[in-house]
Image 1 (tube, rainbow, N blue to C red):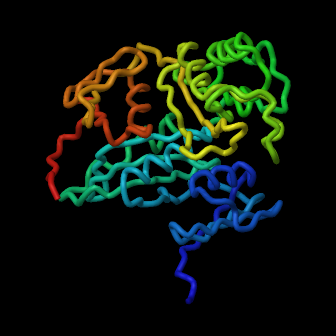
Image 2 (tube, rainbow, N blue to C red):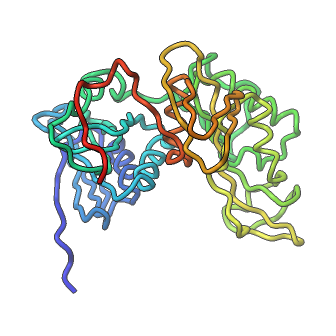
Length: 347
């Protein structure tokens, strides 16, 4: 069987390491070839050959308007956006955009050299060109590449009594294996409190930990897991984030099948996130919960009754439509931002 036809593009890049990190996350695959002076990605979906050439003149965008991918459905769109956001890469989501004689749901991201990438779903044709991508996306500050302020602790590192950051300066704190060290309950609470102290409003805490059906000390596990000295009860990391005042806490990974079993106790990989509360001032938008439950209540006490509009800070709205429950919420554009157009619904 012959290989499928693949679209090929080669990009000049100013920093090969940063560009490889971006496209590894965007495409969800490892480079097919990686050298000190060259990298190549060959994903099967989409069938693409993408080459990165460092050390050459890399104009910021140049004549290119944008590049991107059309995905089959909203679930795939959310999965790619979450992958980028978890890696600390900023995106800008737009719902129901009228552009290029079509209605689309999409998000935008800039690569390290300023090229604009669009990832979208096609929601139907319309009879007019539409307003297109917003000037905020193309020219504004919303997506200009910037270095996210991230503090990360690995299980092999010493645990500091105080994080080396000023109050409210971090975009993200990552604790990878930290809670598998033999820390006391007070030490764990103090560490999460430090994470909250350094986070900006809306900033994220990410926890990666091996959790057990009951606590296990010194489990003597094989391979890289051999560094695990303590396995907390599976609900303890969630409670730590909630008790510290973080909101939007959710388990990103927690499988039914355990990774290890010792003395009848199953131990599972847990990935967890929570967010510092967003500042209540600033822009607000309306959202509507679509179901299937009668209502939901968030960590700030807001009640989302099915089919009723609720006014929330824009940071909360962004979190609602970027998470696993994105398909359960409609986020409405501000009335003042509506274009004076008529859209044919249906289809």
